[in-house]
Image 1 (cartoon, rainbow, N blue to C red):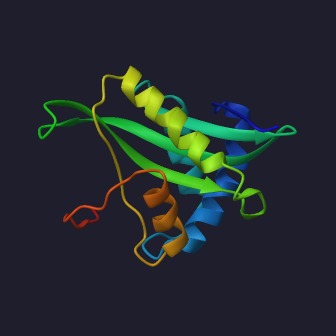
Image 2 (cartoon, one colour; image 1 turned 90 degrees about the vertical axis):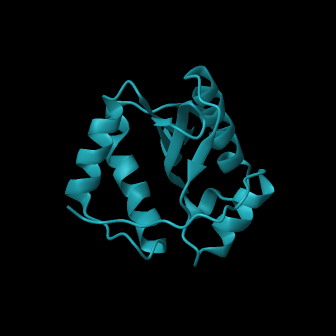
Image 3 (cartoon, helix red, strand yellow; image 1 turned 180 degrees about the vertical axis):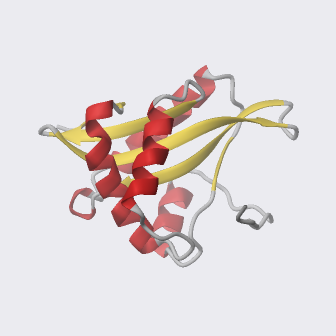
Length: 147
C-alpha cells in the first residue's frame, strides 16, 4: 500500500527521475538534470514550500510540489502547485488524488485560501484529472519572460 509523505534529501535522485517523465510531456520545458536537482534541493530547504511523495515498497512513485505566494486577489497566502507527476505504471490508483489532497491540507495549514497551477494544454489526461478532482479552468493565460 503506497504512503504519502514529505520528501527527504535521500529521495532527490528519484524525484529528478520523476521530473524527467513530467518534462517529456510538457511542451514548454526541457529536462536538465542539473537544474532540476538544484531546484528540488532548494525546495527541500524552503520553509514556504513543500514536496510530497507517494512511496510504495521503498520507491518514490509520484510527487507534487507547492510553494506559498502572497495573493493580492486573496488578500493573503495562496499556493502555487508546480510539479505533479505519477509514474506511468502506477497511474489510476488514486495516488494523484491523494497527493493533491495532502498538498491542499498543507496549503490550508499555511493559511492559504487558494491553490493554483499551470497545466499543459496539450495534455488531455492531466486536464481530465484536474477536472475530476474539482479544479476549475480560468480565463487567465500564462505568460513568461526569461531573465
